[in-house]
Image 1 (cartoon, rainbow, N blue to C red):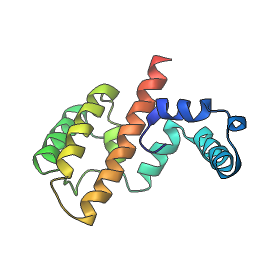
Image 2 (cartoon, rainbow, N blue to C red):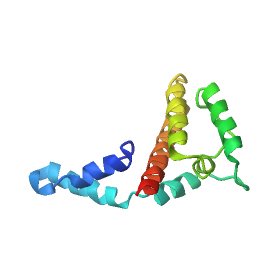
Image 3 (tube, helix red, strand yellow):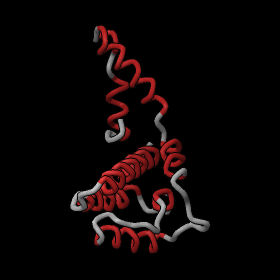
Image 4 (cartoon, rainbow, N blue to C red):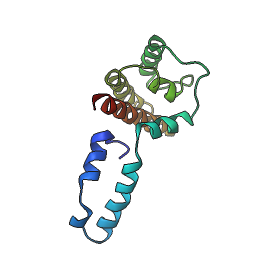
Length: 136
């Protein structure tokens, strides 16, 4: 669910627990309950708990910061993830940037880099949910 975005959510919710037995059925029912709770707003709120800027960043400023993150192998100690998600960049543009940045983050071999990948994954999912909402 953390990597599947809206399509992963749909796939999980589309499975019928009656087709499974025992622990598999119990597990599916538990993750379906969690999957029903996943929303764009929930992800934005989770990212916002990391922190947020006092004033919104412009699209151009966010693009500059994304370029810097890419150049620095995903490292950025000055930009809050929620500010990137709330920047108004088109979800597809944002997803493209974040996928490139996530790939570069793996060049940093540290626990910190893995934490950054987790945050980037949440941002990618949030952008995918934003795209999904815009197309419905």
